[in-house]
Image 1: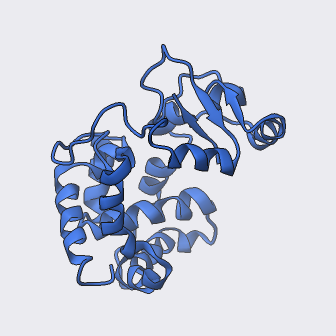
Image 2: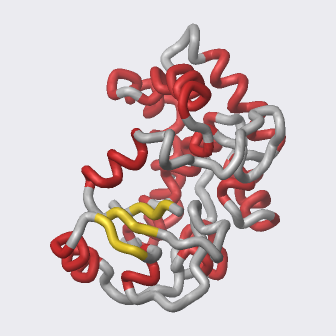
Length: 227
């Protein structure tokens, strides 16, 4: 047992198992291998009419960014080049249906929904904290502790499900930990609000993000659909 407090293994599984009820809207109940279908689609054309889940053969009511307008036609890109062209052309492909007000806390008000100069300003502010040279800073401050906590949760059993028991939780617990949200607080928030975007945009977390953005100035800190 390490010097850190172990995370509850059953709780971690409940929160991060993609098959849970939390993830049903994002395809959590999909059981087939999507890669053969995606490979076939990519071989036929870089872009196809329809959403990714429909083209994959999933018939559930999936939801993800880009599907707020069910009455509009959708197109899905299946090559790196096609995705890159869409992401770089903010005159034709917008990241948000409307302007983003960073002072209005909400699900859609984040850097991911910003475009053009606004996105670039926020990106250049936080990007220095996520380059390879800062990896050791993240490891020593949060990742090492998180890894030990997760391993302590299943060490006695002598076995683990690699994704659910270990890998899936590391990125989220690392980021929320850097926002001064401890694992117990995150667990409670996750139960109350299963939307990860909603958690990250919560008031306490947003305040932590702003502190990190200020500190970063002085310290180290696929398929896609468009409508």
